Length: 348
Image (tube, rainbow, N blue to C red; front, top):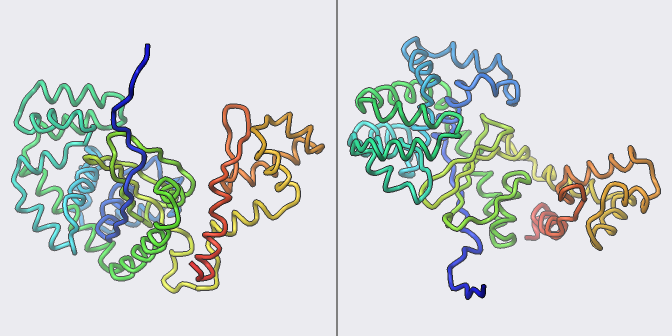
């Protein structure tokens, strides 16, 4: 069959950055209610227990409610409706949001093809609710979260969210609000400063520490939001036409006082990876074609254990990757080396 393709395929997406201490509040609540992830976070388990116990009893009760029903998700989705300047503006918005609009904003976005069902579910259409439930049946908590929302009095949800967020934010974010605002904005500025030098895909990959996000037909925008509390994790979410990544602030931007002579960790990793005769030979081989481990062992004439060490360093720096059982070069990463160096030296 011959096909003349006249469809529109999206070649890329637009990348936006946004930062606000308000997201630190919502992500802090999310982390505090997710016991299983505590061993993997930079902050130890004891830190989260201390944060919880410091809350007034009524706020602790709402936090437990959020843990049962994952209402931190609601907070995050509401924060995406407007660029709120401060806590007061967000709470005022939440207080005055009509019930149907509150439910609509709280329901998870399940793709453009489910938007009509999302709107009908808000109006109480049982068939639409079932459609949404079927669409997210494989998700870890969306089915229970969606069912809970569609049966809930919005007045109850509103009071819960206001009490929880106001209590958490006032105690745990507001004392550091100005510092956090500067820190988060600094990371946004660093990343967006490379916007003209990197493709959208390369910019996202760099910001996410090596996680690639290829374009999707239904996604026209990628929104990158830095965070500190959920480090080292990147959290992925969806909005209409938008893929959202809450990504960890870079190590070099975590301190209040930045040393302008401290090179970024990414730059150090890349130069360490290529600053070795053996690893440069491996890169040279991989410019020709992908190689299996056995092929590289034979060409490099070295023990597999030694070769593994070199390959691990190149993979950690994202210079190479696995494609099935073969190693292949990621040439665009090597092309970024002079860009990152010029940025560090102030020659960008």
